[in-house]
Amino acid sequence: MSCESCTGCFEAAPCSAPSPSLNGHISKAYRHFLKAARVCESLVVPLQQQDSTRTSVRTRQEEDNSDIDDYSNNSNKRIDHAFNTLIGILADNQFTAQTYLALAYKQLGPSAFLQMSRRLAHHGFWGRLLTWAFLFVEEDSERLLRLLVGQPQSEGEGESQDKQELKEEGQRAELVQRVNDEAEMFEVFNPAVSCQRVYWNPEPLPSLSLPLTHWR
Image 1 (cartoon, rainbow, N blue to C red):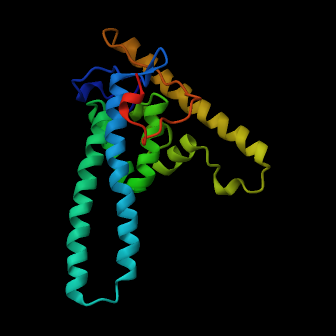
Image 2 (cartoon, rainbow, N blue to C red):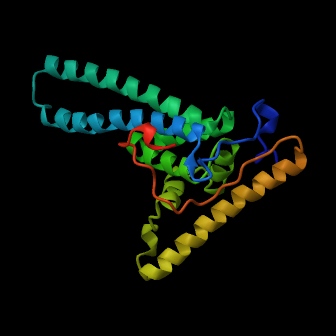
Image 3 (cartoon, one colour):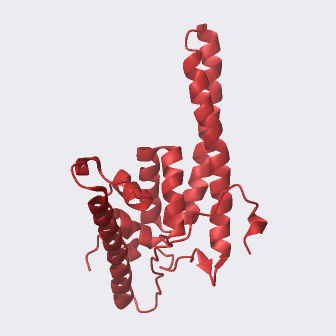
């Protein structure tokens, strides 16, 4: 196994990762993630409305625009703080995974990143498993998002929908298999460490609008 895929030399945290659910129930770690995701969502929606308002008032006087810029900067700081918390939870104290998630946040923006991170957590991509997922897509956050969401690439327009869906399912299966293979190999070289495995969850994403007490 190459040093590129093994990040254990640089991280003191174990390779364990919280499971999204236990015996059909939301795990404590996943509940913690959902709580952070709900905070992020509550900030993203007003940001989108604010951007729309800001565009409509560009013809105002310069001092008015300055006030809007100050408000926007403060909002962005709150959003960045909330997403940094979300990234820390999902990365599970794994530095390399946290670095890849931070890069994805910059590449995708808050809304698309929240969409991607919810699916990563839902299917069991936690901690070091995230590192292997990003290596699989060659650090292409948009490609990883497409695989998670199920959006075919635009160059496949000449193919039938069924053929595109089969190709997409094959790529997702390859992603899961690659990550789980890396986890197994890591355990071989680190027998004292136990890694979780990715499981493609067929259930829909938990709604962030539901109270956390809804999940037991």
